[in-house]
Image (cartoon, rainbow, N blue to C red; front, side, top):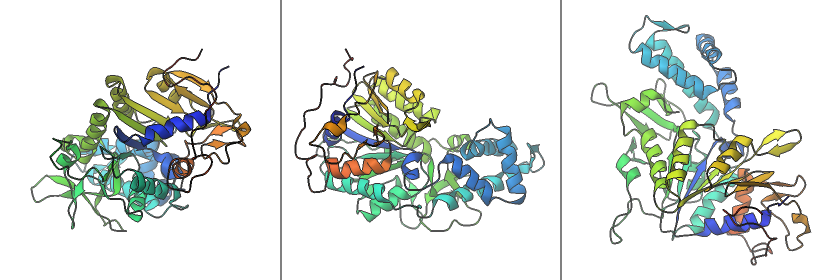
Length: 417
């Protein structure tokens, strides 16, 4: 069976990331936070349950019991907000043991504040890969034709902390000082004529938080019945304030220009026109709505391309890329999937060539685990080392000194013979 050379793959990835003429974006899921010790969605659901007490804990457990087995806190939040919509202002109506609009609102607030308490603090591990990624952005992308854009479903503030520690200017859609407010026209801004200035400048990284953030708060405005989302950076949530995390149908209906839809539109527009590369890491493709946006962009624009680095799932003693993710790679030829045990490029799936140890010119491969014979860039820690040693801003090693001709493999898009 034909096998794919991991060294060749590493060089191809490096070349694609180095292009300054195409749009470059990153899509980070929960795996990027789990890499530094933050809880995944299952662990987060357990932690939220532990932080609730009394009637709130009983109601939250009742919601989970109503949902399919294995449901998580995000699905519970979605159900709670459906109930809030059904309650309206009725304090008498009872649904699933929850009585009245006030009880549903309190449960929503309490669950969100429990989530915030779990992810707001420093992670169990250092911010190593986030810092390296931020330094790479600062070192290599000041002269790009387009700004680098980061899309993430994570609520935590890890990327904000890393970007600020590394001195990387970034824009997240909010402006202001006392109570920064969201400005959708700045998110939607595109490059005009060459002699027109771009605001924010293209050297500023864009950070788009698709599921909200623990420092977003929903506030009532001076106009009765109207609310808006503001961003605060305080260390403690204010009592009774509603966090804007995990978008619900209720938030969609309030305003077309709330952050959630504006940021999703930004991802859709990015993929739908021009030449674009989207790097996907730490994402399990479990959000159907976001999948639709990504796949629609890949389908409608053949000049867009995506690379998905899959951490893999345990199968016995090995990590293997899930079949459902490989299926996406086979369906969309401009989506390459790099898993620990297999790679899918151009719709063709093949295992890795595990003979990298025979390449005497390689001293330390940041993308390959020689002991377990697996490709490791699905781990954000490994991806950080890859940027640091294989691409970037460390003293060159033998690996960086020049192109090492790999064994013969098909180019992306070519069928295996």
